[in-house]
Image (cartoon, rainbow, N blue to C red):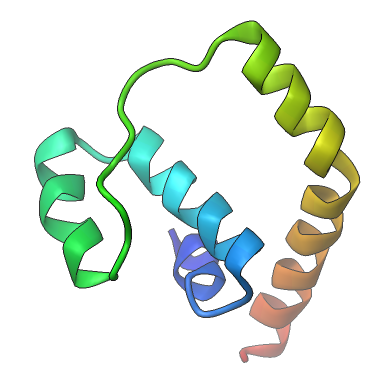
Length: 79
């Protein structure tokens, strides 16, 4: 949750990853209240198809690992 919180304050791609994470781990009644406060589009709810997941992983695989490493460094520094 701390990483998601920090990611919400960064660039659009990382913010989108944080929103997707929250959409997947929080109960629907929480995301329904939280997302409008964050200025986020409505929660997506519903599983992704295999083709869509493959495309996302191919498109963002390396950048997700780099962003995760960046956030871990920031957490350890206390930013």
